[in-house]
Image (cartoon, rainbow, N blue to C red; front, side, top):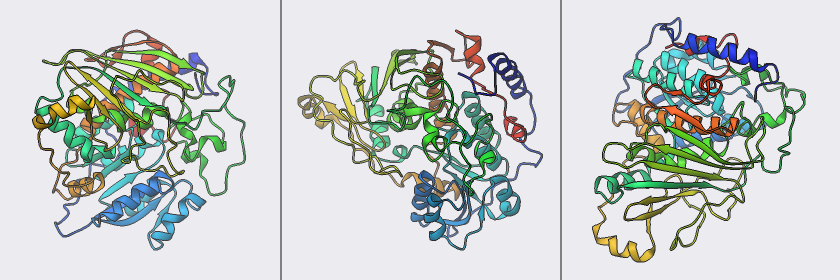
Length: 476
C-alpha cells in the first residue's frame, strides 16, 4: 500500500509530521499575495495554459473558442512530445515553458488566469502557487488527489477571495445543472433516500494482472520529459510508460481511478442541491481484483450521509467494473450512450452494458440520469407523462463552463463550480479512494474532518510529506 521507497513505519512517522506541519499557521509563499488585475469589459483574459497535451489540449481549445481569452503562455513537463504538438502548432508564437515555477517567475505580470490540465496529483502545487500570485484558476476534476490537499485549496480560496476558481466538471454549466436546481426548488426532487451511480465502461487497467507484487520496471526516460518535475510533490518512482499520458489514473499513488474520473460528472448536482457535504461512513462492498498498487477491476462502494435539515438520510452506491452492474428498476428503458459526454483525447468512449449515469430514488419518484450535462427523466414513462404538467420551466444556461470561468474573471458572472462547492465533492471521492485502497470501512467525523475508525487511514488523509522544494505549497 506504500511507495517502494517507504516502509510503513517511516510512512506513518512522516505522515504525522506532515499533518502537524499543515496545522501550523504560516504564509503560502514568500511573496505577498498579489491581487488579480481588473479586466475591462472589452478586454480579454490573459491565460497561461499548464498541461497542453491530451485533456489539457481540449481544455485550451474550449477556452480559446469562447473568444474571451488571449493565450499568453504554454507550459508542459513533456514539451516537445508528440501529444503537445497540436497546441504548439495552433499557438506557434506563444512563449513555452517546461516548469510552471519558471513561467510564473518570468511572465507572472502578464498572466491573469491559468488553466490546469495535468494529472490529479499535480493539480495542488500549481493551483496553490497560482492563487498566491493572484491568478484565477480553472483546474480539472477532481481538485486534488488527497483530502488534505483539497482542504488547503478551499482555505486558499477563502484567503484569496478575489481569485476566481472553477473545477472542470462541465455539466455544472449545462442542462443537468439548471434542471436539477429547478426541480429541487420546485419540490419535484425531494425526500431522496438512495442514489445509484454507475460507470461500467472499460478502464485502462482492465486486463492488467491484479496479482502484481511491485511497480513496473524502470524504463529509459524520453528526452522531452522532465521526469523529476512530472512527479511534482510525490516521490519514489522510476519512469515507466504506464505512469504517464493518462496511465497515471490507474495507480493509487497518482490517480483516483474510475471514481475520481467520473464521479464529479455523475454526482455533482445531486451533491450540491441535496446538500450532501461529507459522508459519515464509506463501506467497500465489493473490491474485485484488489491489490496495493492499482485500482480494483470492479468496485462497489456505499457512501452514507446523515439527515440534513428536513432531508432524510441518503445512501449513494457507486458501481464500476465491466460486470458489476447495479440493480435496474422496472421501467428503466434503454441505456443509450449519453451524447453529452465529450469524447476522451484517446478516442471514443466504448459503450458498456450500462452506460455512465445515475438512478435517483425518492419517496414518490424515481429519476434516471446520465453523465455530464445529461438531464434527468422520470421513470417509468407512464409516471413521467402524469408529471409533465407539474414540471417547472428550466432556464437555459447563460454560458458554458469555460465561458463562465472567463466571464467570472472579468467580474461579469460567478463560477458555478468554485472550490467552495467542488471541494467537498472532491473530498467525498478522496474518502472513497481510501476505502478502495485499504479495503476497510471508513467511519468519518464530518465536523472534525477526521477518520475515527483507523489512525492509519486517518494519516492517509494527509499522505506522504512532499519532497524537497514543494513544502511551501502546504501552508496557508
